[in-house]
Image (tube, rainbow, N blue to C red; front, top):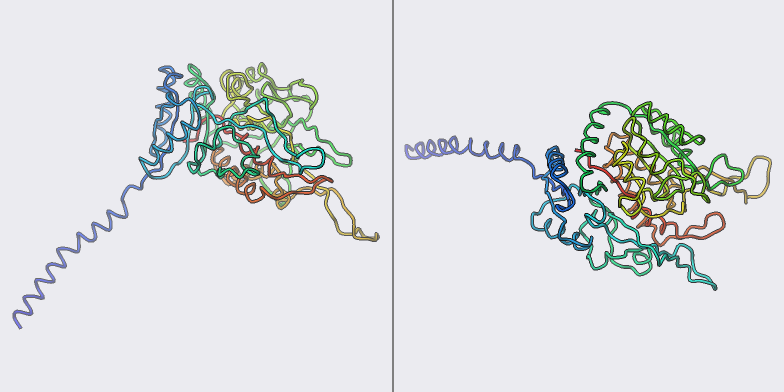
Length: 452
């Protein structure tokens, strides 16, 4: 009996001694510092000066929730080689990727090559339906957004290669990619501008200013099919979308150059430009290159900072020094533009679709059609305005511009992959509108700095 009591007392003492250690272990597990995702900051050490490098380091230090990795691209002549190097480094360090921020022109930190080759229309007796530009190559950073690809397939990428040749190229982004397309001696100044812009706009509602120069007019419609201003106004006004609830929206169709200069003097703005221009500027008409915004005027927009969404024309060009985007960033007060690097055809930019409708009252027959304003379901018919909608939907939920761009990219890519073999019969023609959507994905870029 005494032996039993003694053993019981020893057991109780052991439990009391060990209990705190168990409690401490649980507490330690609960309060352990979570593993941070890797954010890559890629630059070319031979294409920055001491001020640029210092500014990059100060900028990196402001990212508090990620493991920040500085990566020198000096030794990598092509994007596939740099891609493999980043992929190998990520495998070595492990964990997840939070994003990739690139500093430099495409000649400083290489961009992937993209060629325009697609089978947009089905073939017929006269031709095979394949469109191909054999003279030009374009640039794209899109493939830096995941590490699932074999780099041997990532040179001269085309829609035709992905769809018709079935090359194993994964196009769904897994993290955001941003590039500041400036070079030695230009980077530090811009980083300072970006910091100032953030301070000026913190906690404030910035108006959205839209300049639209549409060209795809159709008889009987109150707007052009490729009119982004009309679509954005619907995003704000229609109950189905109901975005821009707390944001002032101002739209211009006339006197675009004068109104843009006026708005720049008023204050900070989120600028949206819809045009059929090129890397030299935004044009007033499809046929003539008479610009309302060009290299000279964008440098003169320096009264106030503004973000930019440059839609439907290749404002970023070859990600070199000869583009509207470069001069806006380096010489003006443009901040973090979203812009194209591939010339656009405007295909699929439909504000209205010619669709079957119920028989009007007092009429007979069931073959009635009319122009119907696109709704959310219609946007999923490979309409590029789907990207615009998803982007502003994310903005409306409080996301940053880069995060909103990334989420719109993911949604647009997933939709495009799902539809890549789906032909659509619209306006009397059958077309593979997903082909144009794929090209849009490779073309659209976030050109500035990631938000810290």
